[in-house]
Amino acid sequence: MRGSLLSDAVRREAFAEASRFRGEFYECLTARRDELFELVDAMLCADGAVKSSADSSSIAKQVHERSAVRRSPSPGR
Image (cartoon, rainbow, N blue to C red; front, side, top):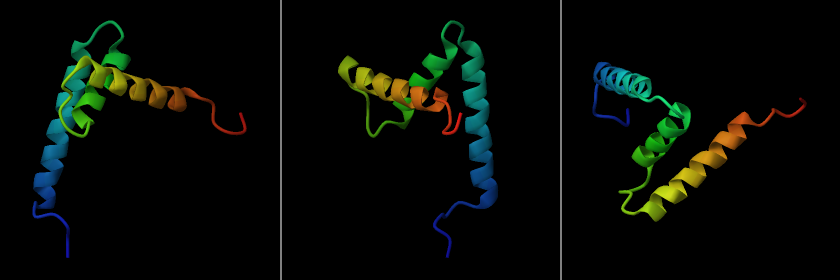
């Protein structure tokens, strides 16, 4: 039994629409686009609403930490 009530076609179209939105939004950003994109992405994926600057600061820290991990050299390099 599948865990989703949505058909595969509906899920694929929703994913494609979200991907298009993300690409178009990214293209709208200019200075520091990677950092801004990651911050917005983290805010949208946060558990619950971001209600204060403290919340956004916490999210920004998490984004920064994730980015640093991704930029770190892989083991053996």
